[in-house]
Image 1 (tube, rainbow, N blue to C red):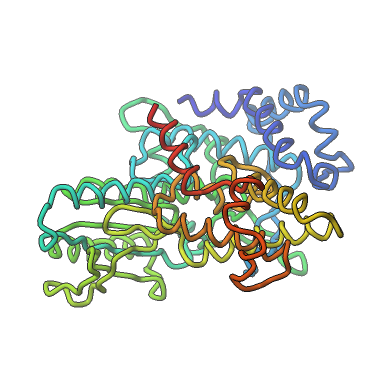
Image 2 (tube, rainbow, N blue to C red):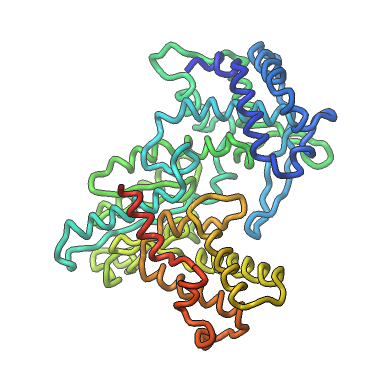
Length: 447
């Protein structure tokens, strides 16, 4: 890649403006994000001209990024600080992140699944389940089966990546943007822009300005690129271990192997490699399992907890290689679907139970379809794309039917099925069966 040519390409700036428009098209931010009285909506109307001017300014080395302001947002009951920029800086930041990501893409391990175009977030779950199934099939004797599984989480990954002058991050970026032996080098202006995006100036309280020594610009696209880059060498190292399975999703690492000595060595190496990069393990999320069909303990590594399933990215992968929703994900999904059903029932008001039942089932069916929607609970997509545990799906089928019956009849116990039989909910009212739908979806995928 010619870095200077990429940063001077008007098409990249136009695409970034289009991305911002798609992201905020149905929100007030389309008009609230402004700079000098010009909103994002107005910018989109003149995207071609703005893109040409920005490309020319950046290419000439005259563009200067403004300072970032820290904003606090609430995400999953947690308060997080994100970096906020003016409108033009948002466009430039997006272009720089896209250029670095494009240069980095061929160098990433296939075992890295986070923030990669065309790779869905449920893929690592399916890959680990396939590895567990292969392990089971290769060992007909159940007594010979058993996988040692390391679950490790990088402590405060977002806020811990060093960005000071001595950080390992800068040689990594140089190696990606200036590959050895290819005769490419970044101009001082281009490199200054890259550095300003990765380590921006910050305006604090009272107008004081400074830069961070740790932490990447949370909330901006460059942060996801850096999450992938900073541990990329570690990914390749553990991905190459024969007979093992390795997967990483941002700060979440999983390694599995049938040999306890190999697993112990990898455990030591993970900590050593992270320490060399100025990072550490989150002790509260450190988990070591011995995965078997009976959940028995390991005589070779007593510290590895015996289990029949391993939690991973919101799912539970069994020793048989089946996938179920985690308890937390299931509760969250059922709570979301329950709210939809109750709101629909209130909107309907007093009505015929048959009509209410058919409408409530249609609402649930739409919420559970295998597609990504703006208002769809994330776990709903998992049910059709990743979950394969038939017992888990059968239990969810029952709970959803009970939810409909409870809403229609007002009976909170199982005796509601005396007034509305389970068969009527499935047949006359048309509530889909997740177990059956999963079989149909898998059949279509196989064809």
